[in-house]
Image (cartoon, rainbow, N blue to C red; front, top):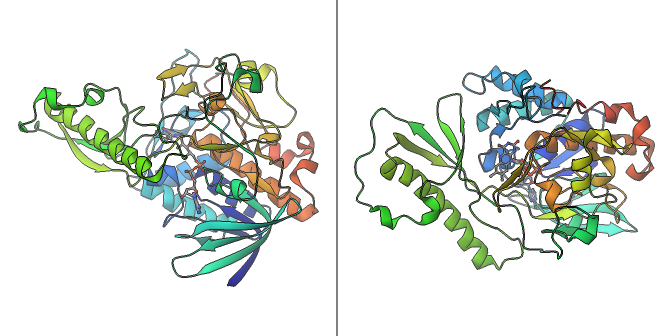
Length: 431
Ligand SMILES: Cc1cc2nc3c(=O)[nH]c(=O)nc-3n(C[C@H](O)[C@H](O)[C@H](O)COP(=O)(O)OP(=O)(O)OC[C@H]3O[C@@H](n4cnc5c(N)ncnc54)[C@H](O)[C@@H]3O)c2cc1C
């Protein structure tokens, strides 16, 4: 098997992996990025979640990416500065930042080139790893045409589902934790490993001049979940609406393969019938412009990290912070599976120790699968928050490689290059 070497290997090129690769490369490290899809972007591009919700605490990298997209005709057109906290001073939700997936990919690739991320292996899937004495020595990946072994000093797991961390033997969490686990006020008495935030199949519709002709379907033929369903819609630069039919299905990674495939298929059918109902029964003048290539998944496995950020951190807000807070977030506790959304009055901090595995020294998790409880994950999963965490993780990995130390040796409060990544606002100031 052919062997490649690098300082830092990032597995997964979604929001977290993009932040991680750029953060690591900016420290001067030799970075290699592995991605299963044909281009970087992850859920944002492949599940058509090409919209950044307003949130505090995001990094300059996010701003640079958006400004690059604004320079591409039709790529993005919103005012970035309007979207730096969830609520404005009057307590009203700030506008989101929609953009086109193709513009995001081009913008990410330009950022890679500028920051020095030179090796990006797309269409390449992580298959396994070799671990010795709490250290990942190498991973094995499958490219379209060969198996490769990749040796690195440091690994960043940005797969979303913490595929690398689990293969390396790290402990993990799944589903709702019981109240006794983290003493969270809203947690149930008993853990429920099947309680996961919902998965959705997003689609796009185009407003047209005339309504659709009668299609022959009777109202009674529509499944009840498609009739007048509440949907989250965002207007794209070309006037299309990006539609997220909230709370479509529960996708447990431990379902049997056939059942999993059935649920994915039925989520797509629900999305289709949601449009159909709007266009024909609801009389809206909307043409179906297409479905996302993949279903969008909010939650699967999470790292049982050195510290697990939880509802108590969210409630405490910025009045109480650990001394290793590396990012802030003010998105509501937003559980699509149960239709619950609890607004926050201010932001809260995310601890660096939530990226650290207890078992592997040279690994950080830089994706939605970082060490966060089920309840807190419903808040801090937004793309820009994950990208910001990824950037800190990448920089921390770069420091560790240079100093030949482990992330658990870093004293975060004395690491200005890590602390300054996130714009640490979050008081709901609208700024
Ligand atoms: C339906 C839906 C709507 C959302 N709406 C919004 C919104 O409006 N605004 C917002 O800011 N956020 C939104 N989010 C949240 C946000 O999009 C995600 O939480 C975020 O993009 C996750 O980023 P990530 O890097 O953790 O994971 P991903 O983006 O999923 O990236 C993981 C990457 O790892 C790769 N990978 C996985 N396994 C392997 C493997 N074995 N080998 C190689 N590569 C692998 C994948 O291909 C993928 O590219 C939404 C999420 C969903 C599901």
